[in-house]
Amino acid sequence: MSMFELFFKKKPKVVGLTLSGGGLRGIGHIGAIKALEEHGMKPDIISGASAGAIIGAFYAAGYSPDEMLSIALRSTFFSPSSLRFRVGGIFNPDFLERLIKEHILDNSFEALKIPLYVAVTDIVKGRTEYISQGELSKMLIASASIPFVFPYVNDGGKMFMDGGIMNNFPIEPIKKKCTRLIGVHVNAISDEKAGPWGAAKILDRIIHLALSNTVYPKAKYCNVFIDPPNMTTFSLFEKKDVQKIYDYVYDYTSNYLAKTLK
Image (cartoon, rainbow, N blue to C red):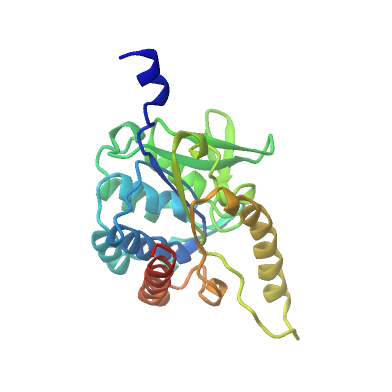
């Protein structure tokens, strides 16, 4: 190949997909992925935080959106049997570990069919780390360890918790590795009337305002940014909303893509 041909050779297209955190609202990612596939978009590399990391892992392992939804509908989340009421978290994350190990048998990043980067927060050093190798279940649980809901994960002396604490939309590890970046955010704040609000409602609002502050400045780096409105009307923890969340995000994404990709 001549220098001229080498200089003008087109770079191969690499599609990246970043999935935000959001508790059980992360089920919406499955609906978004379904719609993206129907429009011919499949990622070559994935990054995610918290619930987005878990959905990203199942997709990277080869599960279809329909298969992932089926698993979510028949799985038990945040059951009374998982309550532990210990310092660090009120739920035992064992149910997450069982879910992951039952369906992703090799339990390693290296065995995934699509490269995956998982955001975790080092709560001692106050920084985000992006994990892409080693034991999969341990890092997925760490990325999804919502403060006071799940305990931190100890990894070689490091204290890892929810990746969304500092970076709920981790485009950084894949931004320069792809030629086209797709982002899906499932935490858009609902438009509600002002108070009176209780303490729990105010705390929830403050947390989501803080999370949004780290997300929207990065939307400009996405070629496609899926951001269904009013997602906080759905609970972080209520399984009864699983099908509704999937349907809502699937319909929104399908309509959005149909309009923007004409």
